[in-house]
Length: 264
Image 1: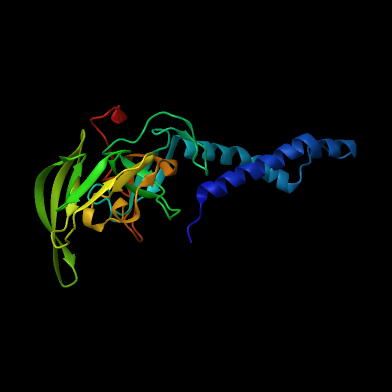
Image 2: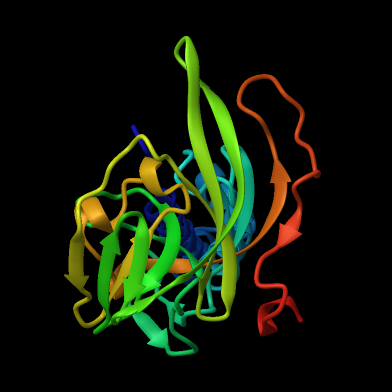
């Protein structure tokens, strides 16, 4: 079962803060009136006073500044691998209230090509995909090629790979795809066929796709991502750890968007 950490953290801050405030305003005075040492706090108050500042700091940092996130699947291969830990910029798309996600300060909006963390429809887990379509865009996908508002994206063939599959090998074609000013690498599996499909992105929504195009559950399957469910913008890989009993490594450390303002 997945734990809703922001929800738990928010309530922990509220409860410890309320206990500390109650003691400072009411209970401490009562101890003084009854002749007890006003500084002799009950254990629960002592714990609340100790944990509240720490929990509040974590909440502020995690909610408004940055948050680590671990890649759980192969949907963003080759850009992101299972075991990558990425840093998510929580204020790139605006300041939001924790848990409810309401934007209170507008700073910027997702752009085509961004790697974005969000909560998809019908789920409560964090997903990470690439922003393909903005509100109002018409997206078409034909023969594993993307068209945005009638314009075909640019593709450059890189190499052919073969990965283990059962007792044989599965062919993988690697391309550089350019969307706007962002060039990124994608994987295609020729053995997997796609039908022609088109979508129009509604207002306050984003069309999301994984870079591992034939192994990604994304907007082609469950629809668009809501603006209210945006978590933040992935800006870097800061550590990698293979599943199991393996030491973390820093071999894959990198910033995304090296040619943009985010790298400055």
